[in-house]
Length: 266
Image (cartoon, rainbow, N blue to C red; front, side, top):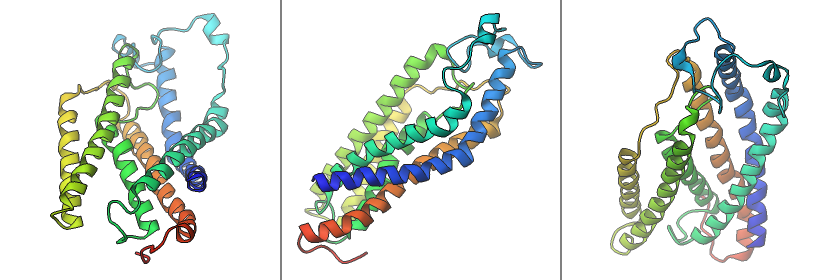
C-alpha cells in the first residue's frame, strides 16, 4: 500500500505541473483583467457607481486612504502568479494523488473484475474524480475571478459549495453500491449505467435545492468571466485526467509483480 501511495503522490505532483501550465497560459490573463477591473472601481473609475460596492475582496470599493495607498501587498502579484500558484497547485496535486492511490487500491478489481487493465481503471478513476469533485460542484457554484462575488455572502457561498461537493461524493458512493448490487443480476455495463443515472439524479435534486449565487457586477466582462471559468475547469481536468494516466503507467508494473492474473491491456 505504501508503494502505491508514493506513486499516487508523485503522479499528483507531475499532473499538478501540467495543470500549472494551463493555469498560467489560460487562467492568469483573465485574473489580471479582473484585477484591473477591480482596481478601476476601487479608485473611482469612470464607470464607478454605488451598485458596484461590495463586489470583490472583503472591503468596500471606495476611495483608498493614504495608508492604504502606501501599504504594500504581503505577497506581490508576481510571486502569486508564479511561485505561489505552483506551490498551491502542487500541494493540492500531491494531497489528492495520495487519496487517488488509496481509492485505486480499494476499488481495483471490485467493479469490473479483471475486465480492465490497471491503466484503464486508473484513467476511469481520474475522470470520475474530476466529475465528482470538480465538474458537478462547479456547475452549481463555478469559480469566480477577483471582483466577482459579494463579501457579505462569502460564508454562505463557501458552505453551499462544500455541501454540493460532499453530497456529490456521497452520491457517487451510493451509485457505486447500487452498481455492485445490480451487477449480480445485470451485465457490468448495464449496472454501471444504472449507477450513473442514480448519481446524476441525486446530485440533480440538490442542484435544484441549493440557492443560486449570481453576484457578477453589471459591467463585468462576460468574456473574462467565462474564459476564467473554462480555464479553471481545464486546469482541473488536466490535473485529474493526467493523474489517472500517470498513476496508471507507474502502478502497472508494481501491480503486475504483486497481484496475479492481471487483465490484458485495454
